[in-house]
Amino acid sequence: MSYDAPLQEVDAEIAGLIRQEELRQHEKMRLIPSENYAYPAVMEACGSVLNNKYSEGYAGRRYYEGQQSIDAIEVLAIERLKSLFGCEHANVQPYSGSPANLAVYLAFCKPGDTVLGLSLDSGGHLTHGHKVAISGKYFHAVQYGVRKDDHRIDFDQVAALAREHRPTLLFCGGTAYPRVVDFARFAEIAREVGAVLVADIAHISGLVAGGVHPSPVGLAEVVTSTTHKTFRGPRGGMILCDDKHRKAIDRAVFPGLQGGPHNGTTAGIAVAAKLAATEEFRAYAESIVRNAKALAEGLLARGIALVSGGTDNHLLLCDLTPKGVPGKVAAKALDAAGIVCNYNAIPYDPRPPMNPSGIRIGTPALTARGMGEAEMTQLASWMADVIDAPEDAALRERIAGEVRALCNQFPAPGIQP
Ligand code: DSN
Image 1: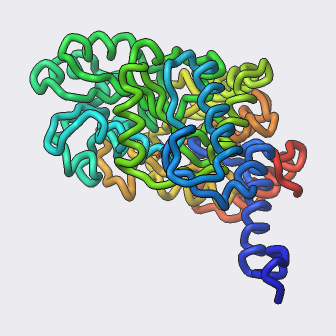
Image 2: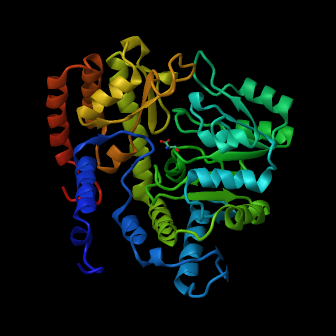
Image 3: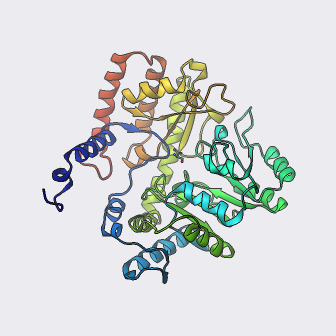
């Protein structure tokens, strides 16, 4: 066997599994709100010779020679993000969202310092101070939540905790919060107690770039994000910040936390940032939100309760308690019917995290396929049918066939069916 042969010849087993995953991504309706279809151009940049190069350091200040192309690529990615988000500095080297957040801790905190973030069950992220994560183990993490009655951020609680604990960092943003994040309100509180406000926009960076969610830039001194969710770039991370924090952030990412950046990813981020600056992308972002609202309407009409009563962004959190179906049972039944989501805790969930009361769904991937409100209405009806009868195997099979037929009309970007 030649070492230079294509994947199919070198390793048919892996090639077959990748093909199987391609088919899955083509023939199922993918509703996990943090997933998407990266642009084919992004995939091309990621799977290129850039994989072969080490580049510790930053453009013009590297530890190895041979950076003629790499420096130009990284500068392009940075300049495009600065222009897109209107920020003073961008670091594009974090390997993903969690390392991006960890770098922020390293830049501003010593172990044991106090940090304040949104709790996981209220829609926050492990990296915002959860007790099982490094953010909760190495720092004194205090958590705020959403109100019980309307599931919106409890700003009275945020302000009270901030005044009591005087955190070094105040994190806002999350992974299962279906409403607009009021960055201005957070900034006011951070300013009052002398905390650095960090906005984690991993889920909504595409919505911010597309102008359908307010931007934290100018309000939060530091903004972190992944680059592969609504942004449609490669698996990666970025940190945007004010100029005064440039040195601290850059040093924290390298040499503080990471080694060489993944240069293919950097190129992919540059490509995604270029595409996110187009009118087409604004229209895409608008459609994501329009579709999420249509899906919410369809589900509510079928008696499925939604945390906070609906959505302002790309995601919905369904509370299946009134249906008497645990989230995990629903998620598995829906997957068998060709509709992929994840089970998820809801605020004040009486059930454990591995078997919670809710499912989390979102519209970025379906919207990338060109689906619209009519398809969302149909989807809501299929979902409600399955949730009403999760044990009905014949129903699941029939719906899986109908889902496949619909997916055949909406090609998945970059996938040959
Ligand atoms: N795994 C991501 C999500 O699904 O929201 C967050 O890290």
